[in-house]
Image (cartoon, rainbow, N blue to C red; front, side, top):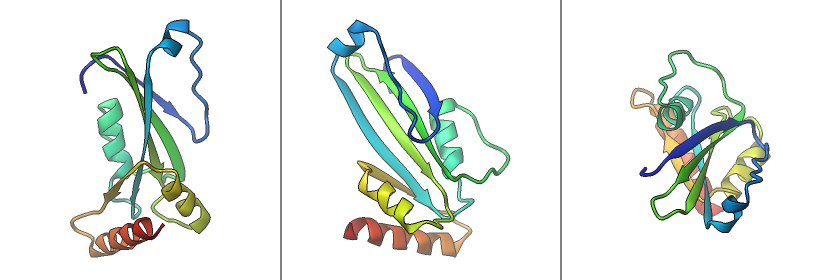
Length: 131
């Protein structure tokens, strides 16, 4: 994405507050993307590569993490992209429903060598469509 970029990693529900006056005069856009899929399909790795230019080599179970990328666009506007990294376990249906209801967009991830992960994506897609 063109322009300068500031990348922050925030735990879920952590606020980001700016106190510079010039920041309030610019138009700010904020978008929320939710990454969903089975456990161990690479959701966290994709986010890490996109936001931090790092490739994760070890698996670490995710409960739920909010990542924020802030971008200064060429026209002076700023864009905040919140990416919610969800757990692949989905032990809490209410948490899944909340993630779906607050998203502006979804990225559904599956592993090409795991047919069950594709079935999970189909279930998620149907749940997203019905909400």
